[in-house]
Image 1 (cartoon, one colour):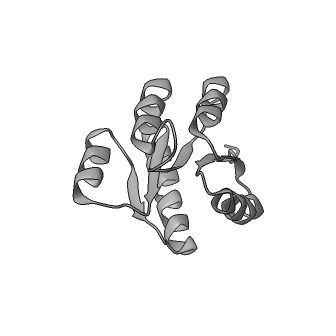
Image 2 (image 1 turned 180 degrees about the vertical axis):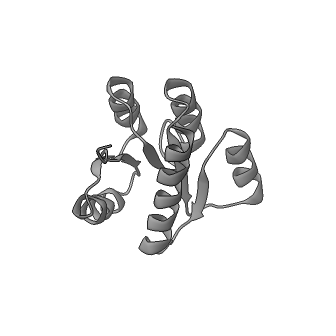
Image 3 (image 1 turned 135 degrees about the vertical axis):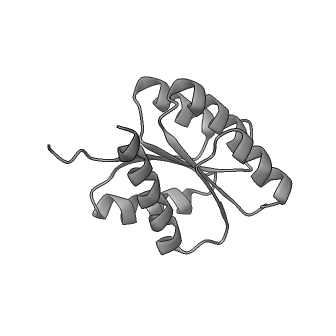
Amino acid sequence: MSETITRLLVVDDEPIVGKRLKQVFGKIGFEIETFTDSASALAAMAEKSFDIVVTDLKMEGIDGIEVLKRVRVMNPETRVIIITGYASPDTAELAQRQGVFAFLAKPFRLDELKQVIYRAMESNRAEE
């Protein structure tokens, strides 16, 4: 069986986040697309499926919870990881109810995010 490339989509209104993650995950062989607005990210998701979506929680327009809801409808197998500088028990609980894979508070360490993404990949494979 050939190893498939993991497709990762990152949505964060801070361009540096997407840029940094693109460098790191691109280097280790991910196919990665980054967006600073959720509408463009959702348009990309409508065109092709992604294995993992990393989204900021607080953004102009469509927030991370709404991105999560729409991803669950478009592609229920996609793992969604929410990153936020505004972590609260209420938000985490709401994200859990909507089917989030993981919830990371900013600032997070890159290796922390890598571990969560690898866990998401494993859980994807376990369901195949």
